[in-house]
Image (cartoon, rainbow, N blue to C red):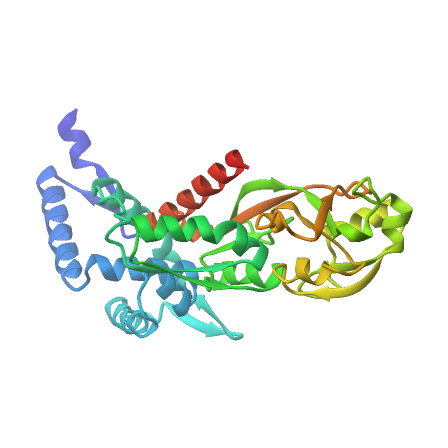
Length: 343
C-alpha cells in the first residue's frame, strides 16, 4: 500500500503538479530543488530581503529608509540590486506614486511569512538604551513640550545619553500627516480621530480647563459668574484663529459667544499677556504648572462646563516592531504616569 502510494504521489511545485513514479525520483527532485534554491540565495543576503520587504510595504523609498534607519541612497542602491536579482522592476511609478509589479505582489506575502519565521528563530538582543545612538523626531505644541519634555529629557540624559530629539510643532492635521508619512516618529496632542487605521494612539492623561485672570480684576470670591465672564475680553491659544477648539464648542452648546481679543500660537506667553489687564485666559490646567506663588494671576473654574480632553501619543504601526521606538514610548508613558500620580 505504501509503495503504491509513493509511486502515484502528486507534488505541487511552482504552480504545476508532477507525478513521481518512485520515492527515489521524488528525493532526487527535492535535492535538485534544494541545490537550486541555495545557489539563488547566495546572490542575496538577509539585509536585502529586509530592505525588499520595507520597500514593498511602504511603496516609498524615503519611508522605507526611515523604517530601516538607513540613508535614502543606500536603499535606492539596494533596490537596484534587488531589481537585478529578481529580473523585475518590483516598483514602478504610476500617476506619481510607486506601485508594486505583479511579481512584487506575489513576493510580498511570501516574504512577510519568511521574515516572520526567521524572526521566531532568532532571539534578537534587547534594546540597550545606555548604548543606543539614535535620533527621534517628535511633534507637539509648546503645551505638549511643557508637559512631556522636562521629564523625558532628564530620563534620556540619565539612561540614554546617545538618544537625541528633534522636536517640531504643527497643526493637528499636519502632525498626523507627518506620522503617517514617516517624517515624524511620535506626535503628541488632542487627536479626536486619527484618519488612518495604521496609526496607533495611547492616552497619556485626561486634562481639564481652568481660567486665569489678574487678581486685581476679580471679585472677592476669586472667580467670575457667567455674565461677567462673557463681558470680559479673552485670549485664545490656537495655531489658527479659525481653528475649532474645545472652549468654543462648549460655548456653542450653551448658545453663547465670547469676544476673543487676542489669538496666540503659543501657551508660554499667554499668562504673561493676561497679567495687569482685564483679559481672561482659559487653558489646560497643566499650562499653569510653572505658576509662581507670587503671580498676579488667579486660577478659577470656568463658569460654563467645558469637557475635559484626552492628551494622546500617536505613532505608526510600522514602528511597533522597533525596539528603540517601543522603549521610548514606554518611557514616556511611565514618566507621565508618575507626573499624574504626583499631581
